[in-house]
Length: 385
Image 1: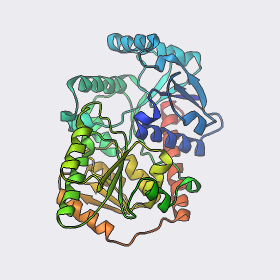
Image 2: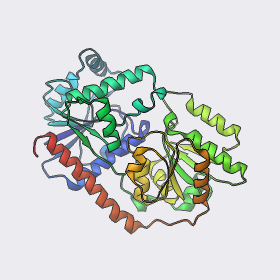
Image 3: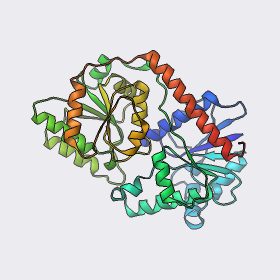
């Protein structure tokens, strides 16, 4: 059986998505039967390291996935006028693909089974962060998946609840697949001294690895740091992630201006997009990991922190509770004082070194469960169970 994934974005444009697929491929490879072949289909111009990271993948590059190529434009026209993706469906049939996973819909009678991944339903809860054209697009895309696909995947039971509200009459069977983080190669990590020197950081810091999207709620963190500063307490939060929010391009500049106005440039450190091994190193040596987001489908940052067995400071939203981190502490999403109190408590507590042996054993078990859960969904969609 050949299962394909179409990868239509550069790694740096959506680091969370890139890491999701890396984790999924690791999980599948751990448990997959010999007769299952994974096929990675991407554009001729797409920049991604996944083919090199997973040499067992069959890699096919096509201009169908290159933005503004004539074939890509024909696909967009087909999707808009006929709610189908016939060019991509024919391409998949020509390469003997049995199922397209996590990659949208193809239209009725495509000849290829489809199992789509619906990232989250932020647009239902926070529509103010979306332009009307983007809302129309995602509602159409999700509706088509629910009506045309052989199955749809969501990453949490919280998202499943949203899906049932969004599409109560969905024809597609619904599946929950909770993902885990990427594996850790401890031999590649920098030492604490190396990473703090490289990025001019203090020894004590809290790590916030999130895209700079409006919904990620970075401003609350600046407010919490300002409260601590007024109390004469010095605290540092280190941020990584893409600084561009396509829905609100001015957001990052406004946030940085706000930071500067409060004199918190050193307390709220922004590193932007850095090598993945450095993000793992920052997490490994942090006092805690922070996610103040107003909404998540299933937080990659939380899963990575769980893998490292790090303390977590989390906005009190349903999906963070569902992820159930053993070392998690929660604050109301708009309560900067509560967050300030938690930050102070973490940075004045004793630092706990990570235990590589415990981390490795726990991670392998969780990764195996992730892979088995995906295979069970795959077999269900293919009619093997």
